[in-house]
Image (cartoon, rainbow over all chains, first blue to last red; front, top):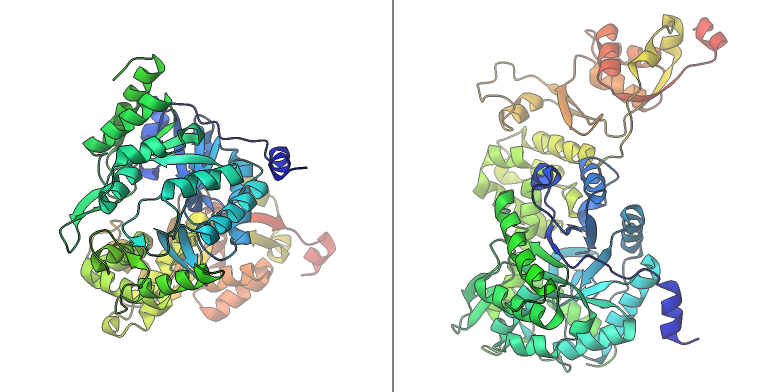
Length: 295
Length: 265
């Protein structure tokens, strides 16, 4: 039996978020979301915030899960690290997914742990044959353990590496081809990285394997410059989605048709109407695409 | 990159990440600068700011007592000393109260570490397993002799914080629960932290209450726990503490001894 067939036989659940707009869930919005004035396509949670035994986090998640499609988004698995994945953490992810049966599970092309420590940031890795093999091995283990397809998210990066031998898009496409994973396209990350490395975000989108994309992320960034005066954009998730990112998103949807789209706002979280307004803007673009209208 | 080089590469990156005195790792570059210090500093900053923010969320009263800047400086030292060992940040900071107790610049505030202990207990209670408190009707019509021989299982969220300072009063004044005022009685206070349903509750325990609950937690029958509590504090009032145990939803199970044992006691 080929590896691809064996994978197909153990991976029955593929990601199936509805092609609508959703939001990253914050507890301060619980009552507003439950009141249901804003039609939401889905909600997304950070897996690690729901790994306690009980209490309000699980009570709220159970109530929301009963009404909305759910995306579980991991931030702590360190898929892009050299060390083997943390089996205990993988078991916790499995138990969370078994309990809430989300429509999608996603993680990052990044590392966040090294040695005994957890760094609480999505750190970059060089792209070469060794790191490619390691990432594929890790995603294999995640998908086999969870019994489902995972989506891998493209990173936002601030630096480049002398050791990188493979362009990021080729690296991601090859990871997806070898592991069978789906992709999460963070359009803000595409924009941030392109500006930071002096490249063209539209060329990134044109070369990206869009046929594997099952979710899109949109979020705000902070603008700065480096010591040479070159743009240094920071993926801060603390402000509205920037206009050029909305335009880039529109051009992605023009190519792909509607895809589940999440608004991420993790720092300086605004009042619910502000976040809901961002989701409404994404929903309008998705709605026009669903009707086959051009922008 | 040769085989195994990835692990070494990552180790070099991690070392430079947590020590701002280190140069940017040689492999790190950018299109605009060869050793992009400011770009690398984004990662350094993300790590520290994110972890300090996690501690601010966990210890709001401690922060209010010392002020934002002092807390941030203290938290930065803690983050460098005890970085998290788990990706579950909602419970990061178990070592923080002990760190605060030994943090020399805060030595004047002798009560500060106890406030931090109280806040860590609240976090633990918030995330503790759910369990239904015993229905108050279960306690009815039990003869006093049998009741004193009974054992209880306390709620999984229940914690006791004993302090030689008025820790509950200080916490309340720094949590919008009570108005700030001068504290008349600077004596010790014991705190009870429990989450019978969804809200974390915090109250001052009556005399001997901490010893009583501590004995019950270690499996002593109610009567024995009452003796322990009376030895701890002669003002211990069994009736009032039983009422708090029952009415406060502090127990999830009640195990009566067999009738003959109950009669004999």
